[in-house]
Length: 400
Image (cartoon, rainbow, N blue to C red; front, side, top):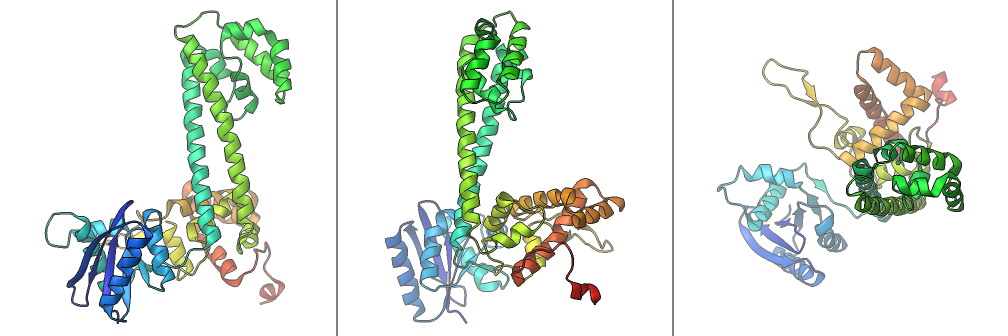
């Protein structure tokens, strides 16, 4: 039986730690800076108060600002529990007083760790999974930045050259972005002419330069009016086009890093054998699960974390009332949903299951979610047994 429970309200620059005994009395309350020296002193003091008895630590963050203190606790062999901030927020309503402070939150975290038995322990991180999480997050940021740049580029083009804005699908044709880095206005395109633009595009290594040049000239011939603000708009369009090309290169480089690091993971070959999983989605799956299934007691638990297990909302005479959960890992759900959607189009077994669900009256989204839930059981079994996916059942199973 632990003698002390230490709750840490984690922050960016400082943490607040409150330690309580088995009766819930505070024996320590301290604000510490998020640096190794002060955190080591805190750990030493709490362990000194415990007098060689077990101490259970709990925190409301499992990464980010709490990464250093968690690493120090794990290195010292201390058990650490994770209490989501949302749980702490709702639990605070059951404690006396409406005030909120770091000390109060830390005390609530410690008290919840003392009373509850369903909290998730934080274990040592899988190095490859942590690196994949950082790389996947960086790739997501780059993709979002590129999408915003696309939207700004089209909005600026629409202000002074709507014909060119509708002439190309800039998100699909790299050559159209290369064109915009040099030619952005109707009169500039007409002066250059199709042959000169084609020659320049060919020199830049663009595919189908003649088609691009001809399309641009046709768009320029449809507008002979110079709109106010054209000069500034053209300057912004050229800059945005260059930014998009740079972001695209960075995304490709990041994806190469993700794939290379992912293939070093022990689950790489197993996940790639599952229909619907490529290197990028499989890397997202590993990043979301932490690279190991030891934190999930069963496939049902994994499905619950992924938001694929419906939760009951029964009351009185109402039973069987199931809804989508509100608390789940959206990164894990994204990886499971997209891989199931791909499998429904290319894997005969998944396609048959998806078709059966649609025949039962489910919508496309519901059928894909049902398939994703079914696939969780398969993925769980494969990773547990350490074997790749097989399209057909083994001969012994068929005979049985």
